[in-house]
Amino acid sequence: MVRKARRYRIGWRHPYIVLLDDLEEVPLSFLYPKRVRFKCKRCASCCGDTEHRIRRILLLDIEAERVSEETSIGLDAFAEEIEGSEPYVYLMKKTEDGGCVFLRDKSCSIYKIRPLTCRFYPFQLQEIGSNRYLFSYTDECPGIGSGLCLKRSFFEGMFRDFTQSMRDCLRTRSNRS
Ligand code: SF4
Ligand code: SF4
Image (cartoon, rainbow, N blue to C red):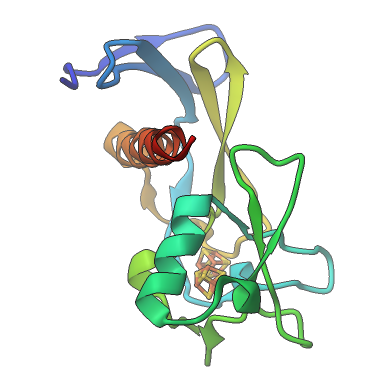
């Protein structure tokens, strides 16, 4: 059961902390930036490399398998196995021009099943302690600074998406072992 989130002000510059209880009743909390504005400009620069950075598009095993099933494309054709980035175990392959293999004319051809890494961009979630997480963002994304200030509910939605994906992933791995 997910209980109602509580919010506290703490001693950083703009941070809020939110506590959520996950399905196993383990209290989880995250920090998020309070005054960040974001509106996606659909430039697709997060879907590949740019002049200034190499984009690593990480996938969970359950995500890669779902993409393979729904597109009928063999996993090896779009993902390579990696180590050292747990819980992510695959890296999306790119074309010669540095774009994701699923990018078509600045649009994602697997949009509904795109991995968490893509759904979260330009934000990322980092574990900063026992059951504590921090949302950060990169202003290399041209959408940062546009649109409305993001509310707590935006980060709560992403955090729930993250915890659900992790639970599904762990459950699937445990059923297989
Ligand atoms: S998230 Fe940012 S980089 Fe990606 S398409 Fe939107 S504006 Fe462009
Ligand atoms: S899966 Fe889709 S959203 Fe993710 S990098 Fe590839 S084209 Fe972009």
